[in-house]
View 1 (cartoon, helix red, strand yellow):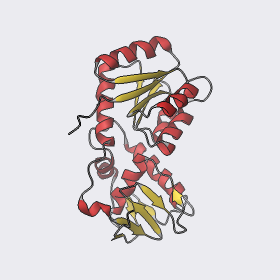
View 2 (cartoon, one colour):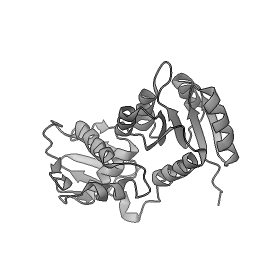
View 3 (cartoon, rainbow, N blue to C red):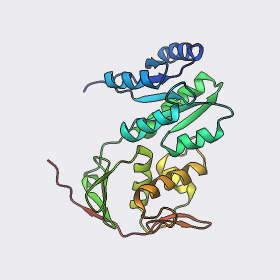
View 4 (tube, one colour):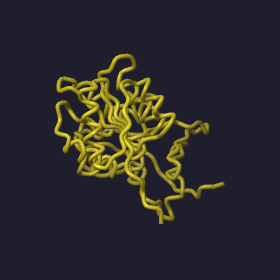
Length: 244
């Protein structure tokens, strides 16, 4: 059996006095670290090698971290930890909403960052599928392939979803018509080790609604149960997948 290689990180921060010492520290912790001083350099680095996780500063010249975060989570499906200034509460919320897995306010203790990295990587790790996990989910004209993590609508068009959105949708699909409160969803989607809060669940539900509802302000599929949580208002069936 081939031993897994070291974890590869991409550290994106325009502040060299933080980036370079942090890269050295992370390297001493056993990570392989590539550095980028801005979003353009990060995109160039991604063409050469795909990291296991991206550490991303929000405030950078040129393309900001939130724009790059959206690309990383939706187009590249990569785990992202945001590095944020203490006063950027709204940016942290937006970052979680567009798919970031966690955030660490500056200044931070490097050992805490390492713990966050390992926590996010554990959550992002895809376990080997069980034999019946090869089946597709079908509901209200939608279809989700859990093996390929591909969501398609009634016309067959693919609707891109991030890893966080995928996990949230699977939680609903495996508990159809059941009310799930925020604590239950955090357990199913992130695990109790997550450094997230209730608002992050609400934001992820809002993102799914914008992609799946005809009118996200009047959702028919993913419903809010006041005082209770959320419910998938659909019958779900598993159908065999036709694999090449």
